[in-house]
Image 1 (spheres, helix red, strand yellow):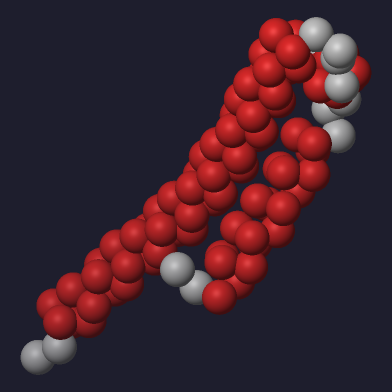
Image 2 (cartoon, one colour; image 1 turned 180 degrees about the vertical axis):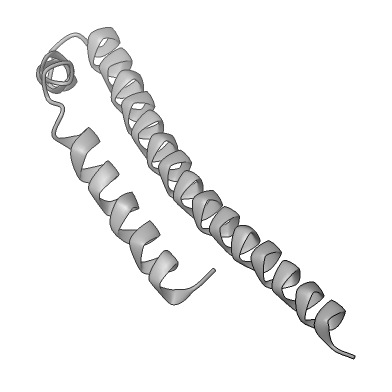
Amino acid sequence: MTNRTFTFSCALLASALAFTSCQSGTDTPVAADLNSANPAVAAQAQKVQELISQVARQKAVIEAEKTKLAGIEQQLEGARQNLEGIKKEVQAAP
């Protein structure tokens, strides 16, 4: 992976994490339930919160891997084109 691809992957990972942490529409009730006086509600809210975090992290990893894959595919295409060029040079040489 090139340095540029790695930097882009890191930026994508950071933006994905920021995006998922900003989605408070579904998280708001969970945040309120974390401080519930009922221990069962608070415990379940904690579990929900942990799963929300896991989902967000996994989505960020998936997006970073998609970006990495796209970079590798571009490298593959360039290598194939380079191979074709070399083969043509070899055929043209006396």
